[in-house]
Image 1 (cartoon, rainbow, N blue to C red):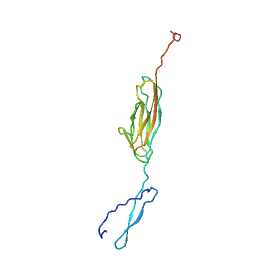
Image 2: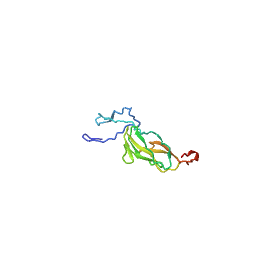
Image 3: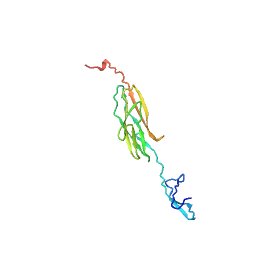
Image 4: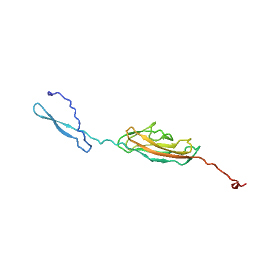
Length: 173
């Protein structure tokens, strides 16, 4: 019972399952006064669609030129990471065994905070000093959202110099 001049606090929660397409604005008859007069309360709530979290990498595959043992690292390739969803993402810079991954535009240390529609760049370069062989790796750009990230497939091949044989017939003086 609320006496005249007193106030009361109520907790009102929207019905579960409302969507942005549902009009939740309602006027509900909540109770009657002691004089049997109706008292109504207008309840308004805004329902927004749940954000989507999508990170895309372009290009999604890098294949570097053939290298020879003793090589100097070639020029790096730029990868652009774009937030194409509707929710903000924090992207972590990956660690790689075979590639140097340098943060570029859009990074603060090893993290890029991307609002919807924003992008950040990284420079991917094969590390130096590998023996002859093929080196492949999937670079995983993870985010603060479980299961949301982007993969970049990267590879390079190191070849061994062959022996050079010169026969006397090929020498002219």
